[in-house]
Length: 481
Image (cartoon, rainbow, N blue to C red; front, side):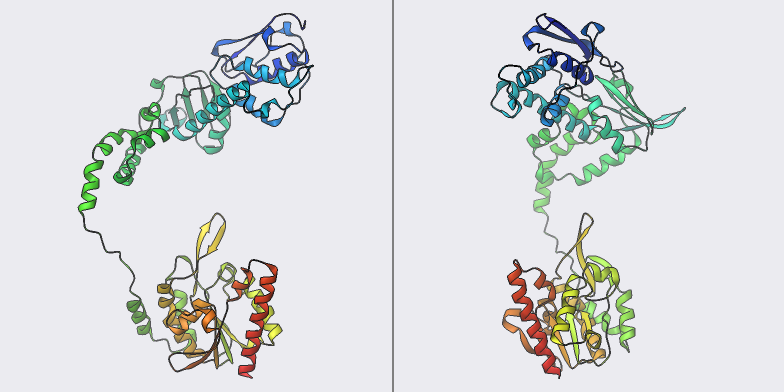
């Protein structure tokens, strides 16, 4: 190719990424500046074309190496509807690679007019992709030959059909669907994707049976007190309203919003329904277990008083022990294994017991709350501390359990356990050490929960608090000696 001649490059209509890359390899290695190139594209997108240059342009050229950010910019900008997109992109690449004074890091100069314009074009394409992902609505069509098919109509601003295709294949792999747009169409038959010619709104159904139920749900969840028309239009531009089933109900809902808010204000506040701990305790007392085994059967079958696991983790250990340790509640590993103090805090507890000279197998170990209270965060179950009301719900079970076990000394591990044994909130700082719990004057001891040692901010803090915990356990050992 003569580097001094004026070149004319014609690419396929729409987003011809393959054709532009081929032209880029040839022109860039030939060092042809942008002002010597006329870029043009077919009027209509050639969705079935291979993006090949005419044979007069010679070989495909050698590959060129560009920064990942530039490659991503090219991939987005070729989807833009601006006919100048190819010229702007080539100017960027040529300036970065020109023989004299190459601007190698030009794409990082946000203040450059060319870079700013291309960045804005890429942003516009990304916004269009987001709108298509968010506002495509499939409607069911019963095809007598292939059965049910789901068809959607969408009007993109740019040529994003091919760029967005994989998103919908990944999202809806198990149904037959088609997306029709004025710039092309996508067809998926559960195994292969086909890119077709433009469609029309008339080719897509206006509604289906599912939309009736969806509209009813949308109307029932619409909050009139939060009606903000500007924000609604910002998140759901008006050009897409015709394609969305819920928008048919919006005018009426907005019109009635003010009166609905007035009615809400006029209504008296409803008193929240709360479970009554006294009734729950009375119901427990009526069960009248005659042994620890019967009590454990009742606990295991009962519904939890906390939100989380439905599995009760029961106490374990001998009857009439020297010591009974009471923790807060089961953790993740305790819930999975069905035993108290077997998780990270339990392992630390075992190590401290051994250092203090206490045999775990000769002690009784239980929890104030019998179920694992947690919230789900992805695959993780995050521990939640029980409330005062929840501790009160479980307190009768704990008291009855200790009546059957009859330990010489009860050790409260942490504030929740102390609250359950005392019947009211206590601070570890003010009550740590020897303590007498109410009732029949049960001899007791209050110390920290082993899990608090794991939460110390620094290794020095953990070492110091662990040593103090071992000293408490040694004191407990001396009390029962």
